[in-house]
Image (cartoon, rainbow, N blue to C red):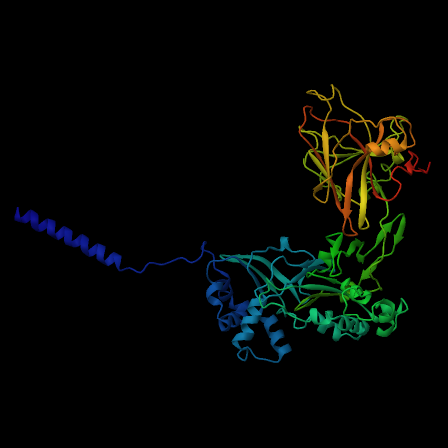
Length: 562
């Protein structure tokens, strides 16, 4: 028994010793989610390329978080890049202060993981930790494409994955902007007249002020500055001449003074590079309710290149080589011609929805034949189902008297047909308008209002707001006089006598900005499954004080005013 107890005690003591020694072992904590080296670890593991930036990171005090868990993108300059930089700033690596080292690291670092696939011609979507955006562009040299960052450094090795993000190797140290937009304009004598206009109206101070130390809260600006030559080409050779032309109150500081409005019309309240400008058709400015239209014509970036009532207004080109200049308060572009807000009065827009750039590029189809456009193939028309098409149709049938003989087939329904279709309108001048939809009435098989029939009410909307009246592609207009029709919300928009050619009043809209807008058709729940033959021809926006039923639109493209 004693022998048994002794053996048991020995075993227990052995287990206690094992447990005790095991519990004193130091536990190794893993700080990353993978076994890959983190950004800092990768830099230090490659001293043949990155010893200098490694020293800068150490001096900045940021080695800790660059070696910890997170999601970052770092543009890492090579040793040769750092050497060039130190020569430019006339400093040695050891002479860099902690603050200088921190600024270098922060300007090369983003709190996001961005592969080169996310890069575009313009600013990156995420701001640097320094508080300024980086820009990228593709440069083609002798058949080779490379990515240029901030017009300063080329990416020589990309998408190096680490445990806490991505590294893009660059051949130059990237330098942040050090001047405000106002200072950039002051430093360029080509802008001397425009600078005086900025000063006289008070907007020089606006674009010269960093209004928040937090870059995420900072208010950015984009300025399209006119050169002295651009002004001279319009007969303006001095600030005095510019003031005489525009300052209608004599006080340019007055917000309603025309010179004040002229300057505000050149400032967008956001930082937009050329790629951002051409990615949208218009941009709001500091001038109330005034927008800048924009487009890309080949390689040219144009402002206000517009068509009004069949008249083409030549656009203002932004000079690529001297634009896209980053500043501490935003971006500066160079305008090669003089421009200002135009006083425009509400004008009727008789919109032929079947006339759009993509179909005009098909001369064998446009006003000659039929064609089905796949989802995403038309810039200014979109719809809900990716499997559906937008069908362009042309006809010579005497029973389908649509304008120019072409129309869009837009079957609306609650099964496999379009639930909604959204269009971007032509430019509509700000004002108050009546809206009319013009179509060739038709219905599919079945009885209207019964299952299988073609009854399908449609709700139109303008800029997201439903118009006051719905309509139905099956409905024909009554056979009444013009006055009687208009009183009931109908009109005869085609010279054809057939009641199938129908104009239907949809409501009154207030257009607050001269711009392109969104017009949407949305099918509503109904007993039927929809109509396979919705012939959409035109949409009319007519100022409320103008004739609503004339002119009429003929199938040969002519207009009739009686």
